[in-house]
Length: 203
Image 1 (cartoon, helix red, strand yellow):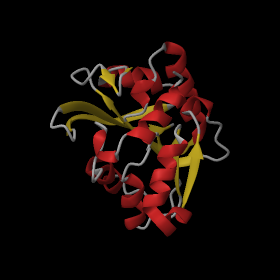
Image 2 (cartoon, rainbow, N blue to C red):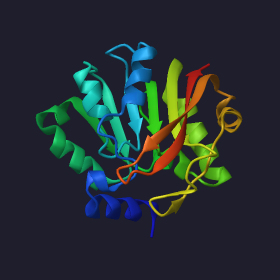
Image 3 (cartoon, helix red, strand yellow):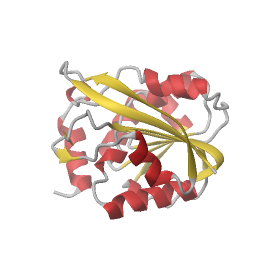
Image 4 (cartoon, rainbow, N blue to C red):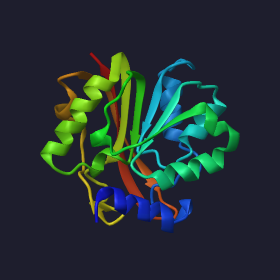
């Protein structure tokens, strides 16, 4: 099964609370955006956001230039239905991140639980190349991914685990590492997944 077919099947067959990455409130990500004082007119893109509640939180905070990219059209259909008329305030892109050819640059790039699905050197390098072109100078990139104490698989797929040094080595050509921290995510099934969140700034 292709990556796209896998994710279309996930969002066709599972409710939002039946997936491990579900968060009713993406507090960590919203707190980081607040801490970094990202302006309300900043161009923000959420990578692999699926039907997460980050977009809802950003809209409530008054952000006006939000893009959500996901490989699954079904995921985007679900979030559009949930947002109702507010969906008109968001740009939606159905694409595999590795096929993404952005037509604009972004001030804030957010990726929680998507990057770790890139599992070979070519995929990881391609991701790094895309973000190096997609983020404006002095723009921030926040990636939340499974740590070395986190799961080895997610949604039945292999993932790549990370620590601070490994993350920095991938992106240091075009980004300065600002901060990394680890955090436990409690899944809807009462299991614990350890994440590492890293904030980078574009050189």
